Figure 1 (cartoon, each protein chain N blue to C red):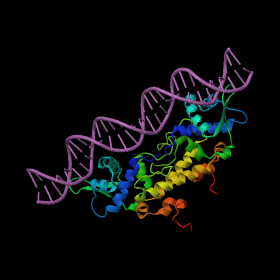
Figure 2: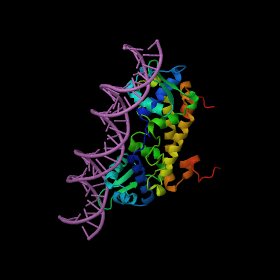
Figure 3: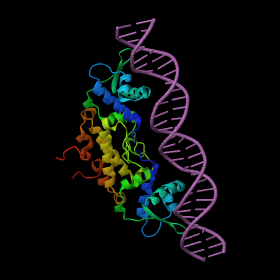
Length: 150
Length: 150
DNA sequence: GCAAATCCTACCATTTGGGTAGGAATAAGT
DNA sequence: ACTTATTCCTACCCAAATGGTAGGATTTGC
């Protein structure tokens, strides 16, 4: 995968809802305004999140969207997986087990499988809450120059 | 990144050269035949590898290509970086330090930076030799069901 | 019934991916 | 010197994905 704007904006929307969704419903217009993104484009993205069961919606006046779970119960992996379709770094790695005909003898396949594994592990371990809390240690790990190394 | 055929085929070519390049030069026709890939397409890919200093070439009859270093001295990261341009998982992470104008306040940026970090670390640690030796433990790590867990 | 919101369908321009085609330059062997 | 096998170079091309926009239908609160 290269995570496209679709996935990135989806995450941005989820983070905005986690931050600003306290009680009621949050309108997409508000989110778009805060995040300075096209509301029309966000519309198509949030629709995927909604159909995927990531949030609740309410139509009509004073309507909008809200999360159905606590931020800590959303992994980044599931959000991106829903909007991007797949997070595999190469086409050789398919979600449905469909695979290349050369797979059996391909010497580079273990590399791609390993890469896919570490990506999924990393993204599954981080939650919406980590992002709104700014948990740099968990996100950046050894690459965090502000985290103590202890 | 999603690693495209360009990067994957580049790696395939390098692996083929590492395996079959014993003494002399290996022609692209031989590589294409062995790997069952379009020679014309490989031509454009190997040209990038050549200009990037990853191998030596010899024109004319009995010409071809050969590696300039030992397989253990090629990291997968440098091979893919050369052919793909970037391995960053999102456009927010640029190679030249150019970045999004919202970067300073973006709460998701540490996530992308962290993801980029683990990908680079993984690919930098694996070499051509690991691939030709089939070092599953190193490539698959905990995802390797044939490796003992000790 | 009006206003504010989501929902739905269609369209579209640009970039990227994944190649193909044709020929020029070079080098080895005879 | 000629032939043949090879790399090198430039140009082109089609399909799919990316990153949106447009317009209207539907629902709900007041």
